[in-house]
Length: 397
Ligand code: PMP
Image (cartoon, rainbow, N blue to C red; front, side, top):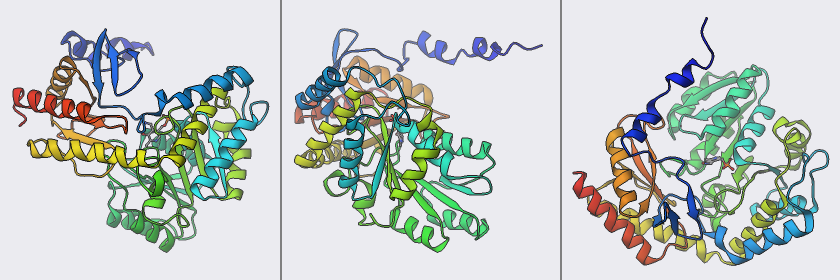
């Protein structure tokens, strides 16, 4: 007989990395007010946050959250369906619908739950999820749930529209199909080829869901995301996103036609059986949306910041993936080297995210850096110079 927990006792990879002193994960942050954070008593320049517009520290966002706690308390203690809908939830849904120019919006408690909840609810027995191989884990979770309910799953090569057409051709014409893609891919930061995706969706009678977690506040007119970037707002059936990045809070949303949102409201278990976002989370996201609408220059500053680092690291000789979003991946190409580089950057006062295999394919191990509109020139120069110093030490440049 085998103990179910045997795998847990046999799992030693994290302990080995800890013993080598290069473990980068679960590092408690003691102060988190801006681009400079405090970890282990030291000031560190953050180059790995998804707090794209830096709004988690904005006085108006904080004040909105505090006021919401004073007015509504700390939690809703129920799902949206039953006792967990506040006027604040409805207000945020209406404001987001206006912002995206869609008929309706539905809030979920996280972005992860949104993807899972939307895909698994809409794609049913005998219908197809058609998914980019590099889509985020929450989309994969949605696919797995849909497949558990006997929906079909097909995947196509990353952002490869020829491969997408190849798989679409094989699906019975009469079957319902949902094509799902990240708008901005969370690892490499590249933007989906939306014009071709839209053409193929039309040609093969498929519906389209775009995950704009890394696109809202980053690309599109005034930060309105991928559909807006390509002037294809009418062609994208559903856009989902998160409040955990640009919106400086916690929660998720999906935007689309009223009848589709209405169906999700009454049929999506991830919504119906889970408590609604807290008053503070919703109020913070509302305040962040106010700022995004009133101060679109923040979006441009974010992109300028990321572009500066992308250009200068490339000029220094690093293998940097091309792009024009807030994500700047620096390829290292080896697990041990990636951990070593993370540690040296950390020692020198720069915090980045390390992506190793199997999270990324062999050879694509990277320092996934990302920027905020609140990074100033001095922070960016510090990050660039530290990369150059450590890169030379490790023979990367
Ligand atoms: N989609 C993408 C592309 C993401 O990168 C993330 C978070 N990293 C999510 C969804 C999940 O969002 P949340 O943090 O709100 O669960």
